[in-house]
Amino acid sequence: MFSSPLKILFKKSKLIFLVGILFALLGAAFTFLFPLQYRADAQVLIIAKTRTGVDPYTTVRSAERVGENVAQVMKTDDFYQKVKSEQGFDIDWSYFEGKGEREKRQIWKKTLVPSVVYGTGVLTISTFHPSVEEATNIASAAATALVSQGWEYVGGDVTMKVVNDPVASKWPVKPNIFLNAFLGFVLGLLLMSILVVRR
Image (tube, rainbow, N blue to C red):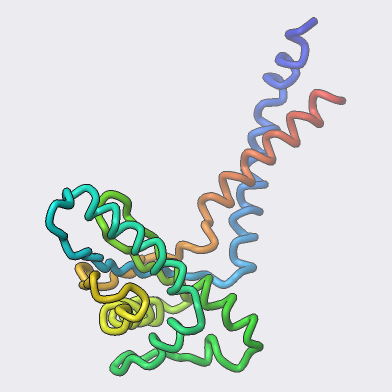
């Protein structure tokens, strides 16, 4: 009695698998309805000045906390203006400008995604853009702005240095075509399995 659904599923396994493949293809195709984006990553080392009697672990933890604060500030319009003011970077700012202020800030937050590498005091600056070159230039300009003007956010007890220049992905990373295809495959299997068992 309890094995009956399993027998049905086994008997219809080829059909279920084919439907899973179909949903995987639909999931992959769905990806292309959205603009493909590349990713570029740069890294900045946050160096907290060592004070007498303070152990290295505490110093690194202090740098991490500074990094967390800086990561939040980098999403603001103030930092956007600092990045925009940097010279020598060929960036098409019309990607952000010409829109409402709220929309511009939302695009900036989605484009620039900073994160702290815990235990190291390293801040990773990730940028996402439909153009590989733009993603790289924005990451480079953001890292430069942080090093040259970031003292306004952290004070004089902290210094910052670019330790890794931007490196861009060879393939688009957003939307994730492989993840969408996998989710489509799983969804197809589940839906078809339910339909087969209920018949």
